[in-house]
Image (cartoon, rainbow, N blue to C red; front, side):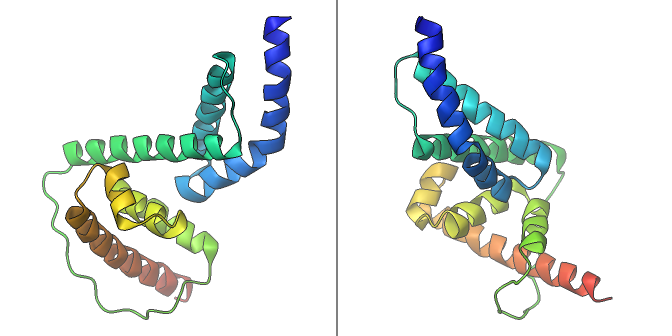
Length: 169
């Protein structure tokens, strides 16, 4: 009775929240495979948490998803640093400051940014966290996080303008 009694409420939670959790992850992950993997990891963590006698709800699942995405972005950033011989950020040309209209293109541009920039922009602008909260999650000082956000916004604007120009060429 023990395993079945605990699994039924979790299965109900899974069925009720899967679409929300997957949508949350997919909008931030950059590709379908990553979204599916992270969503699976989130629900496995939820099942383990419930098995230990704790409660799980949608907010808990989304917090786990955010942390798992951050872990992936950090790992990717470490990998990129190992592979890169040198990195020099070039200032981007001024572009139109109007808000982007195409969500698919925004997701594509975000996916093409380096993981640190993507994480900073997603946490700050999609998750609407304060700069100090973003700094804590990225394990950086507030000042360093502000610099990363400035560079990330410039890289995003340049890439978005390039993607926009490519669509109309």
